[in-house]
Amino acid sequence: MAGARPDPEIAGIEYTEAQVPPEQPRGAAFFDVDNTMMVGASIFHFAKGLAARKFFDWHDLVRFTVRQAKLRTRGESKGDMHATRDSALAFVAGKKVTDVVALGEEIYDETMADKIWSGTHALARAHLAAGRRVWLVTATPQELAQIIADRLGLSGALGTIAETSDGKYTGLLVGDVLHGAAKANAVQELAAREGLDLAQCTAYSDSINDMPMLSLVGTAVAVNPDSALRAEAHDRGWEIRDFRTGRKALKVGIPVAVGASALAGGVTAAVTIRRRQHPQVFNRRRGAAGGPNKARLAVSARRTGAA
Image (cartoon, rainbow, N blue to C red; front, side):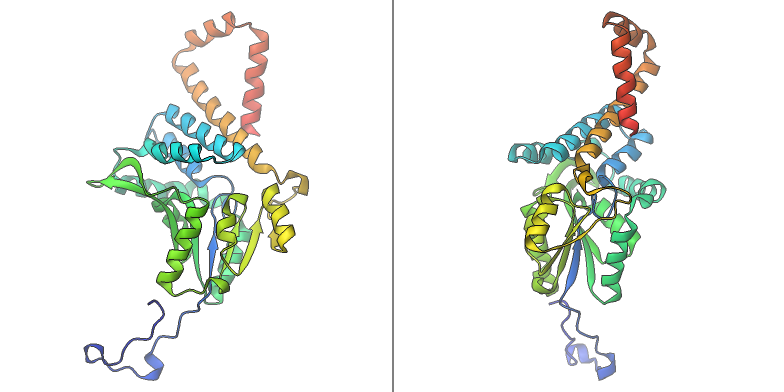
């Protein structure tokens, strides 16, 4: 078991008391990623970076964004999660794992590093300074989650496992999306493996969907919480940390705005590309569809995407 002292008689090695590693603390910290450790959805930032590098078609990004916005704004029904499980990583199907990981590191350094909430990162560093281990626990693919954990100097990451074959992604998952109860199960398994006492552990999240994980540990903290989690945290007496500078409490429903903005932005990007490729088609459609009113709607959509 992790943290156990080595047997001085194994392989004839002798240890002095000073050389025996100290027992690992039995407490640890678990951090959700999206909107807790990072502004927005990490997988969307990653997919956007891949699309910008022509790693896949922009239409794939639009379809992916629609799914993410739907899940974020409407909630995750059982049917939604099954659909997500079947198509979550379809946009990397057939791609080499090493290529995707290398691009993930590049994209993180270029665009995602600036999206880390400094306040949340400071909480993680405080746990590390106290000698506790810190893990990210997220629905984001394991490889991307590990990149984020490595860049932040954390102990490790628990993420959704992508299926691979001959060094390439199949586009399917191994097991379930690490979400809701699956997160709690993963934390329990890690605790058993690492010799952790969950009563001495702390968990951080922004979403009511992470109640199974938050309820599992001795200390739960709501970070940038959605309205449902904020209410639950108040009822349970949990600490609330909000790092959304300048935002009022009435804006705790921000995930809806984020989802809508991401959706509008992704669709607008795809439409802009297609308009450049086929200007005559878009001009004919605009003229046949009623002219000025449709044009104003298009402008409105672009402004929403930029918000």
